[in-house]
Length: 245
Image 1 (cartoon, rainbow, N blue to C red):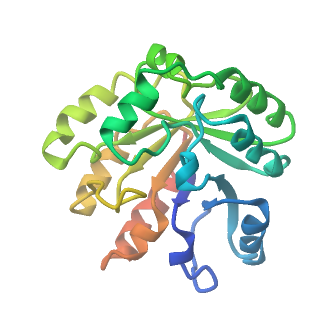
Image 2 (image 1 turned 180 degrees about the vertical axis):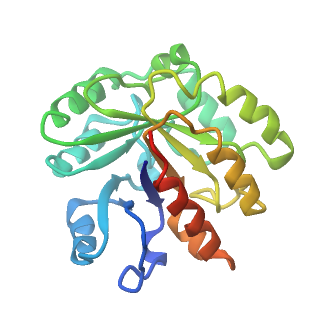
């Protein structure tokens, strides 16, 4: 089993002191190749790049992203990197609905062609939301090609009391065209208000639903490190990494 740890806030991690006793790849959120290469000095760890944009430019990539910002991906050619296909970060739910869901993603073809080209020289991990394919396609956050596809299975995202219903819904989507699955959340993300696991047992329950995948991604490294019982969380990941696929 291949384990990937997302690190959306790598500045919070002391990579020099970080020691992991199982194989793992850490994808760090960066705004440039130059920034990413700083992490390559930590030879005892293996890294992948997670390109993100400035918040004012939408942060994630989609058919709504301008060609200029899509071209931001060019600098990562030849590297192992992840592209988050998500709706642009908006200041409010109202602005999100007006600016994106009711407008055509006019740069979707440009983004698709860009990924096609980059995938010829790079190992690309495409991260997609757990929504029906027709909706992903129509709103510019879908891709199919020579890449590894990851689906975000974040059972905590709509609140812990809705977690059973969320897991039931995700069950229809997990084992379709995806080779990889994200589990979480262990701590809040870019919004700072996201719901996350109360305890390690909830994490174990979700991992139990990932049979059949040969790769699991975890959100996030820095969230685990902030847990008082972080050693137990890493122990669970070590056990999962030994699972035969």
